[in-house]
Amino acid sequence: MSKHDSTPKFPDSYLGNNSLDYDSSIWMERNQKKTTLLCLQYLYDERLDNLEKSDFLKDEPSFILDLGCGTGYSTEILVERGFKVVGIDVLHDMISKVKHKKNLMTNQNNLELILADINYLPLRNSSISHAISISAYNFITHRAESIRDKVKIAHNTAKNLHKMLKPDGRVIIEFYPKDDNELEMFASSFNTNGFNGFIVKQNPNQKSGQTFLLLKKR
Ligand SMILES: C[S@@+](CC[C@H](N)C(=O)[O-])C[C@H]1O[C@@H](n2cnc3c(N)ncnc32)[C@H](O)[C@@H]1O
Image 1 (cartoon, rainbow, N blue to C red):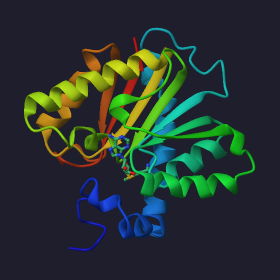
Image 2: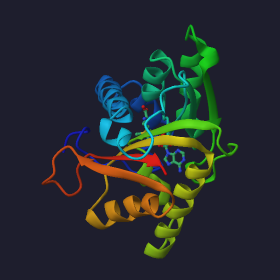
Image 3: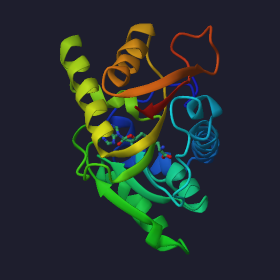
């Protein structure tokens, strides 16, 4: 199996030399940036406009969270597009590389980086306009020892995200659920904690393939 096909393991795939390989991979950079642009399209998706109020883009430039920002491929695109970005990652080996990239940015004041766990975000209530997460969200349950623990973590995280988002805040999550049960667990964690939204699959016939959750705070 080629390196590109192998499923990443958290945290090993992102520690030490693996974090260096990740950060120097042209394929990964292209892939993450392409997905970030797709997530931005979904952020403005009309189907979310049609859910209740549709005035969410009035107060641009918006504060946007990049959940699991890694070495900053997605973050760079968001900063370039004029967002004020808060990049969050739980691994020093990954987020430290964004710190170097930040020093080279012309608009570096638009980027804050926080070493933190998505499950315990240190942010004030109603402080964030929107959030995206690319290829990171399914790792939030990696410590769970039972299905029950997984469900609890997913629900608590959705509840916290809901609190820190401003009214009408949107969340776009791109991830690779391992099966329909895992997808259903994450989708219902948002649905029962104050979000409306849609699931978009790149290939609807593929159970574990690339999946997007398009969410809006109720
Ligand atoms: C595929 S990588 C990063 C992708 C990122 N979008 C980019 O452009 O580089 C996934 C990242 O999620 C982070 N991550 C996994 N679980 C996390 C958690 N619970 N809290 C914060 N970050 C987490 C990992 O440390 C890793 O850097």
